[in-house]
Amino acid sequence: MPLLSKYLTHARLSRISPYLGEEILDVGCGYGELLEYLHPTTKRIVLLDRSSERQSEVERRLARTKVTAEFVVEDIGDSEIKLNLPPFDTVVMAALLEHLTSPAIALQNIRNIMKSGAKLVLTTPTPLGGKLHWLGSHLGLVYVEAAEEHVGFHGYSALKSLFQAAGFRIDYYEKFLFGLNQLMIATLTASLHVSSDESKTRGQTPGTH
Figure 1 (tube, helix red, strand yellow):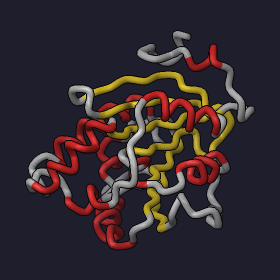
Figure 2 (figure 1 turned 180 degrees about the vertical axis):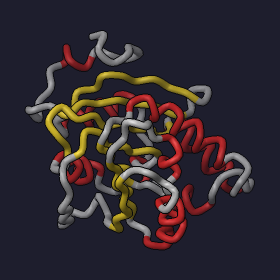
Figure 3 (figure 1 turned 90 degrees about the horizontal axis):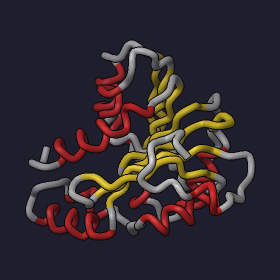
């Protein structure tokens, strides 16, 4: 594993862990590292990734977990996707958004398998973080294939617009890793139109607005 990849993965997942619920969908699960950050209260997790090449490593981790878990090979950005899965109370998108060619389609697919009031927990590099990640890949510090698969990067304003249009209310937002990465917690709402008052939560902890 490249020098910085393990550090960056831990930085992301350690921030995600406090927001995990009982029934989790990890979209773009990579090698299944989130399994090492679950709570004792977790009952079920589905790891979803579009690459079958990671299956053997994910299943090795699955064999060690004590919760109901499975690995599914699907592309969440596919408009024709058919996911026959019970709904989840938590959906994780860790370092995934920047790889999606159609984020709006992916979010609609995710909405369809979320419980009412469910949480979406996301990390994604800032635009500057994305540029430095690309540089780091050429220096052998992070995975080259991850950098090559990057499609685009979103700042806070773009994230807010994208997720509100998809029917999510932003509850919490922060930058971490020296401002190069972003954590966002969003709640699925009943309506696809969210008022501006609901989005004035930048830098607040969930439940304080």
